Structure formats: C-alpha cells, structure tokens
Image 1 (tube, rainbow, N blue to C red):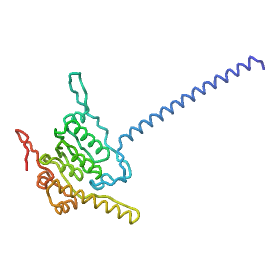
Image 2: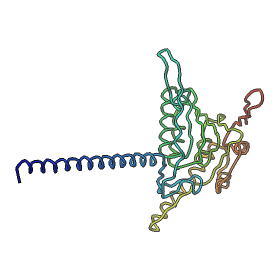
Image 3: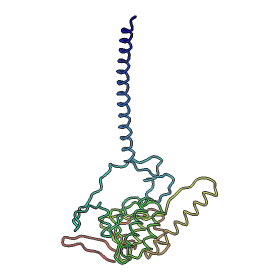
Image 4: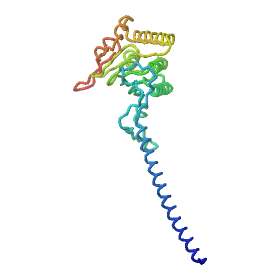
Length: 277
C-alpha cells in the first residue's frame, strides 16, 4: 500500500471523527440548554409558593396555616408604583412607601415573623420622624403568631406618636388585640368588617414533664392576652375570659359596645360620618 493512499485513509478517518465530535457537542449543548430551561421554570414555580413552618404555634383560624407541605400561592401580583413630580424631577414610589410617607402602615395578612418585623420597623421609623403626628395602622388580618403580635403591641405602646387603628375586612385573634390597642378614641372599623377574639391555641408532644411545661406556658399566655383586652376594652376579666373561651365574632356595632373599637365609619350621600361612643 502506497504512502499517499495511507495518508488519504487517515485524512478521511480524521474528517469523520471531526464530524462526529461536532454532532456530539451540538447534542450536549442542546441537552444542557434544555436542563437550564427546566431549572429556570422550576425555580419560578418554587418562588410562587409560600412555605410555612409547621412547628410554629399559631393562634389564628384553626387549620388554615398548619401544614407539612408548602401551600400554593396565587399568581404574583406586581406592586403598583406612584409617580410624583418634585423640584428634582419625577420620582417613583412603590405604593406602600408612598403610604408610609403619609404615616400609613398596612398590616395585611397573617401576623408572621416577616410581617411583624416590617410593621415594627415602620413604627420605629415614623417615631423617629415625628413624636407627635399620629400613625395610622390599617388592619386586615386573620391573626397569627402570638409572640410576633405581642412584639407589635409592645412597640405600639412604647413609641410616643398616637397609633390610630383601622379595621378593614377582618381583625381576628391577634389582629383584634392590635386593633383594640390603638389610641383611645381613635380605633375605627368599616361597616362590613368582622372582628373576632378567642383564646390562644397550640400543641405539645414529648415527655409528660415537657408537655406540662408547654401547657403551663400556654395558660400564662392566655391570662396575659386576657389582661391586655381588659386594659383596652374596659371589660372585667371574667367577661373577657368567658367571651374569648371560644371564637366570638362581632360586627362593628358589637365590637364598639364591647370596647374593642370607638368609631364606626359610615358614608352617607353627602359626606363621611363618624359614629362616636
């Protein structure tokens, strides 16, 4: 076999090898691209889920939050932005920042760690801005974690500006306690809002002594919450204890008579009127 013929054979083999390598590289790139797209879609689906810690003791509506699996949240709703003309040009605010500029704080949703931290930070910020101007706290909450609700309550009592509370939608459990903790004479509710108080709930497992410790702590918290409601409603402890023994639902008029709110806001054909105590 001549040397030129061998050289041609080697050249042909090299050519086919190069083609197969290019085809293999293309296949690998296509597979890698598909895997990246799958991972991206999976991350998006995970970002639209709300994860709750099943070990956290909650006192809100029974069965709403306790779960061992993440709850599928509704589609993400984009945050509205407000454009404002200033002497320095146009400025964009997200809606909650714009409300904060007017000393309005929104407590919307279950009282969780993140929501409580957010509300407390806004209360402290507005306290540093002005110690005299009132703060308006709008509440639409089914309740939540007792310790986080008490953190909001203590901050409200600590800061100097008066905190006006407004119930829109519902104020249940810890939401009702925060509503009642507003400045006396400045606790409001809209006509179709719902207010509910009840005793805290929780659970414990393990050794008998450990269960007893948890039960004793839960009973202490129950007494503490009842005493706070006694302070802000003017009712006796026995009345509060009996009312909160089970879920006690109230409309604005009933909540006003009970002492949780002071004013029922009603809008007539001419102007908005306020029904005082």
